[in-house]
Amino acid sequence: MDLSKLTAEQWTIIIAVVGTFFVAAGLIFTAYQLRKEYAWRRKEKAIAFSNYNAEHLRGVYSHIVDALPDYNLTEEPIKFEIIDKAIKEDKKGNKDSKESLSEDIHYLLSRYEELGLSVKQHVADFDTAYDLLGTPAVQAVMAFSEYISDLREKEKRPFTWEHAVDFAVRVRETRRIEIEKGERKAKALKALGDLKKASAKPPEVAVSVDKKIASTGQ
Image (cartoon, rainbow, N blue to C red):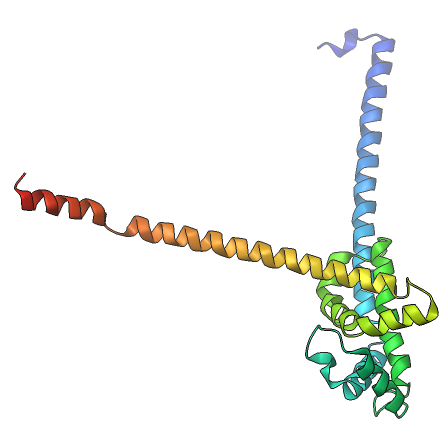
């Protein structure tokens, strides 16, 4: 193409098209960078939850486990009667926590309530929160599920610690899906291994047929 033959109008169109292309490319790149930064900020927020006030949290856990030894043993609910008795018999904290048992339980559940709300509102990244805090969140919500239900009924507030519960439910569902995927993958790999072993074996059926033919003199 002979550029010297282009008219002023054609040059204007070419410049406009090229300019539009660079502007669009710049916008796409900026959007990509912003999306990356947003994703990283969400990860940072989830990581911050795992590190926030860690020393106090260790005291809270220590106090709860001292008062409720079954807490660390399972993800099953602790009976409300057991929790209620432990709260009434609590001697205002232990060597690691100066708060009452009910205050430490409320602190723990409120911590996961805040995390669950942040995940729901896309402030914190779920995958990062799942990896770092999924198990202790499920443990807390499951252990105190009867306590949560009793408090909701007494205070007529059916949504108490709603986001903590929702986060724990989502973690368990994600875990179930991952286990099922792992089981399917394991079955597929086993089937593939069996297939490879079978293909490596001598054709026994053919050998037996050959022997039968030989024995009949055919």
